[in-house]
Image (cartoon, rainbow, N blue to C red; front, side, top):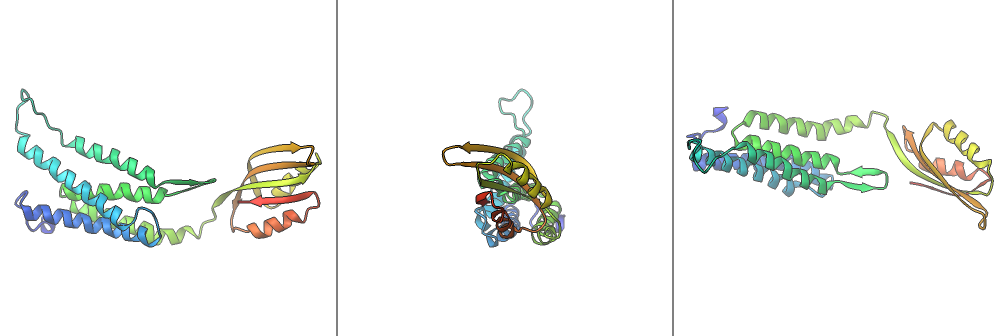
Length: 234
């Protein structure tokens, strides 16, 4: 890929600037997609992650070229691979900050993965691996823009929290289980509490629903059952 590095007289200032600019562009492309979808780590974050990773790899390689010729008896010993390892570790902390748990749902995993990939792209550009960096950027954008639409074609299981208040009747649980089975709702977890003074039993279900989301219709059907007093589905 020498044709992509027109200033390649090893590490001239123009070569360094070229790598930094290319890294910023590639990271920014991924960041734009995240920004459009309103994610907390968007355009600027991805650009900075890629740019910083690129710079750290350039500095690591420059130090190796400058001091790597020292013999084994020297006090200074350099391993350029250690910088790359620390970049990956640091991005792990940043990605963890983008992951949010909301009830049974976890959001931000794709954004965290994008930050991780952006760091890898920046590292590749920093050491002059332009073709892999361009290919990975293209695949990442294809995954975010095209595969996301294809995912809607697949039926996915959704996990819901179901809380049902019933009249104090021990026969209500078998009826609820039969109803859930008829609606193709799989019970993942279950718990209940009884309140003799209030005259009710509260059932807490975690259910898995596959296919279209029909929460409104489901709640209406629950409320049509005479023993049910209140339903909460989230």
